[in-house]
Structure formats: C-alpha cells, structure tokens
Amino acid sequence: MNDRPAYFSVAYIFIRNSLIRDLSFRSNFWIECVASMSWVLMNLGFYLLIFSFTDSIGDGTGWGKYEFFVFLSTALFINSLVQTFFMPNIQEFSELIRTGRLDFALVKPIDTQFLISFQKVNWPSMSNFFFGIALLIFSLFQLTQREPTPVVISFWAVIAYPIFILCGVGILYSLMIALAATSIWLGRNQSLYDFWFYITSFSRYPMEIYNGSMLGETLQLIFTFAIPILVVINVPARIMAQPLGIDSASNRWLTIFAVVATVFSLLASRWVFKKSLLSYRSASS
Amino acid sequence: MSSTDIKQEPDAPSEFSARVATWWAIFKINFNEKLVYRGDFMLGTLMRFLPIVTQIFLWHAIFSAIQADAGDTSDDAQIVGYTYNNIVAYYLLSTVTRAFSSMPGLASGIAMQIRDGEIKKYLIQPLDLISFFFLNRVAHKLTYYIVAAVPFIFVFWLCRNYLPGWPEPQILGLYFISLIMSFLIGFFLEATIGMVGFWFLEVRSLLFVYMLFTFFLSGHMFPLDMLPAPLDSIVRFLPLAYLAYFPSAVFLGKITGWELAVGLIVQFAWLLFFIMTARLAFRYGVKRYSGYGG
Image (cartoon, rainbow over all chains, first blue to last red; front, side, top):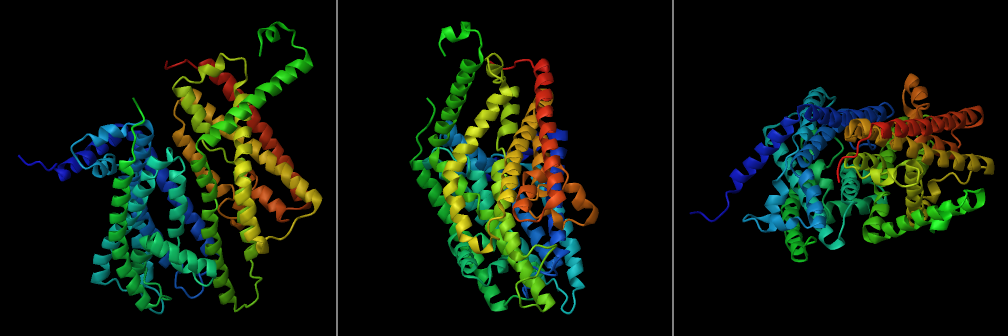
C-alpha cells in the first residue's frame, strides 16, 4: 500500500464538496455573486470618474484608461483566485488556532499546510474572475486600436500572462499564510483581514505611481524586494497592457524577479508556517 | 448596587449617581477588554493609515498627468476646486471622520446575539439595550482614541505641509459638532441594521450592501463634489455623506454659509431619523423575538 496521502484526490474532494455546499444554498450563492460583482462595479465607477479628469495615471507612464483597465482585470483575476481558494481557509486557520481545533488538523495523516489551505473553496468569489475576462477582452480590443502603437498580443504574452498570474497568486498566498501563522504567537489576530487588505492595497495601482519622491521610491523598494506585492499585479498586467512609458530592460528584470520572488515567498512562508506550528499550544482541554 | 438601593424610591440624584456608576463600570470593562489583546489592537490602529498612503500616491500621479497635459509648471492644477494638497488633506480628515463614524462589529454583533439567543441576557436585566450598546461603543471609541492619538498626531505632523492650517474657531466648532453627529449617525444607523436581525436573523448580506455604499458614497474614496452633475447633489444629501464627506469638507472650508447651515440641519434630521428607526426596530423586534439557544 502506498503510504503517501493522495493529495490530488483529496484536493478534488475538497473542491467538489465546497461546490455542493455552495449550491445547496442556491439563492445565497447568487446573492454572493451579485454582491462581489457590485463591489467591482463600484470600483470601476471610481476609476471612470478618475479618467474623466485625467488621460493617464502618472505623467508619461502610459497607464491610460484601457491600459489601466487591463491592470484592473489582472487584479480581478488574481484577487478572485485568492479569495476563492485561500481566503476562507486562512481566516478559518486563525480561528482554529484560537479555539484549539487545530489539534484535529495536526493529527490527520496529511500535510497540515495542505489541509488547512485547501479545505474550503468559496465558489461565489469566482464571479469576479468572469467579470475580469469580460473587462480584459473589452480593454484589449480598445488597445489594439491604440494610436500610435497598437497593442499586439503575441504568442508569448498569451502563455506568460496566466503563468505570471499564478505567480501573483503564489506570492499573495505565501503572504497570507505567513500572516495567519503569526496568530499562533500573537494569540489572536482579528486584524489579520485588515492587515491583509491594507498591505495589498499597495499592489492595487501601477507601481509607477510611486516614482519621483523619496518616500515613494522607498516604498517601491520595500514592496518589491522585502514584501514583493508590487510585482503581483504589475508584472502580468504589463505583459498584456504594454504601457508605453516603461523601459523594456527594467521590465525584463522585473519579470525575472517575479519568478524568483514567487519561489522565495513560497519557501519562506512554508518555513514560517512550520516554525509557528512548533509554538502551538492547544487552547482547549 | 446594594439591595437597599432597590427598595429606595427612585429620587433623581441617587438614581443619577447609580447610572453614572453603571456607565463607569461599562467603560472600565470595555477598556480592560481592549487591552487584553494589546498587540492586535495597536497593529490594527497603525494599519489604518496604509491605504491613505496609496491613495495619496495615486492622486499625485493623477495631478502630475493633468499638469503635464496643461503644460503647467505651477502647483495649482485643480479638480473641481481641489488642489493636490486639498486632496491629501481631505483623505486625512475623512479618515479621522471615519474613525468616528465607523462601527466595526456593531451590527453583526447585535444580529449574532439575536440569532444565538445571547441577547436575552440583556433583556432580563434592568438596563436599556440600546443605551448599553451605546455606552459600550463610546467606551470602545474612547479607548481607541487614547491609543490611536499617537499615530494620528504623527501622521498629521508628517503631512503638515499639505494641510491648510486651522480654520476659524466657529468653523472648527461646527466641525466638531458635525463630527460628533457623524459618530451618532453611524451608531444608530448600524444599530438599526443589526436589529433587522430580529426579522431576518442573518444580516450579513444587508451589511455588505451597507458597507459597499458607505465606502463609495460616504466620500471615503473621493470628495463627493467630483461626481457628475445631478448625482453629486443627490448623494450629498444622503445620510452616508455625513459619515465622511461632510465634516471633512467643512474643515477644509469647501462648505460655507447657507450650505453649511442647511447641511448641519440635514445631518441633525438624519440623526433623529436613525435614533427613531433604532428605537422602533428594537421595540417591535423584541415582540417578535423568541429566545433560541441555551
């Protein structure tokens, strides 16, 4: 008999069960879909408002309206994937620690990080993913008409774009699990979600907005190299939107760096997770 | 309270001192409760400023593009009367206002207590539920400001060059009045939403809608004057506008004279309205209530 747990079939069962559970409360499912879409629509309204006052975000950066909408749809893909697959689990993880129910996960004959990361899938969050597809197609169509240099969607862009989206998801997942693991030390971590929201808010806009001031450049360095959340959306978005104001050499380096950062983040978060489990003292009886 | 207090005829002064003692007890409980998870609390307070930093950079990029377009080298590019400095000041001020008017966990807490039956604990006690939650919230906010004052002052000091300086004393006075009213509106509005739980049991989706609209229509994301023509005047009269936009705009001197007076009256009217809805929801809700849970 094979001693290794069958990770793929366990993951499949998790995904299936979650879908069954989500669809058992069908009206709730649709309400949640509409709710998260309306959030996105409101945001879109805000950006439309901004672009009614300006042609681009940042002088000479090339992030015009439709380039930015490509950026936005990239953000939608990455965030919806994170929210669908990891967010509910990792929020639960903090609760498991606080209540001592983590014991049950620890005694199961499967990797603990795998178990607590994949147990639940929140399917309604995927609605934003589909919205993102629509927005991306619309904006790319507009960009292929761009004057004077229309966007050409190359074969390599089509391959690289989803790969770098997955890299982005990997980085965000690492950050999230490392943050959640800190609740083993802090006792409680209610601000976890807030912290997450605030940190990722730095990744929400093109990184060029931090150009041109001391504080901005410092932030850019920190959030590229210390906590690499700036590369999460920027790298795939640049591949697709090809904004005009960006120097191609630095762009290439950033793209390579994104891969390195993903691998490093995943390894580092794994280390933090294992380290934190060593300090776990069960809270219940 | 000793048993003799109960037999006593409720004459005014001793009843009042008993009340003050109750308030004080509630405040102390809350204060100590906050300090149990100190690390968590302080982290949360500091984090509150991070999103403004991104917003400031975003607007800087926007203004730099507008200036370049206009071929303008001076610093006085404007969007509906807001210069770049005004926008930064507006964000800082609206964060202060939101610190007053946001009530994290209030509505969901009330609804949860209704659902799992915990609320009957309060129903059999000789205290008024809404006042109890109110005092709790005041204590919560006071504790918050005591801890948050340091980072708030620090951030304002850092950004002192963006701020227009103190307004005239009477404007400042009106600003504080509207700030306090925004706290009260926030409280009674969320309490009402929580009490809808007497009917719906689960108010999470309702709360989500409320949060969604608050985020955009309170002026937390952008000054509401920026909205296109018919929308801006509608949105500015909605109760949500008083949770962030109105006090901040008053401080910046964007709302003056008659507009200011009318605004304050409308704010006060909304406050009365939500006190009434909270009271009514409680009164009729309790009649419907049946205590589930052990």
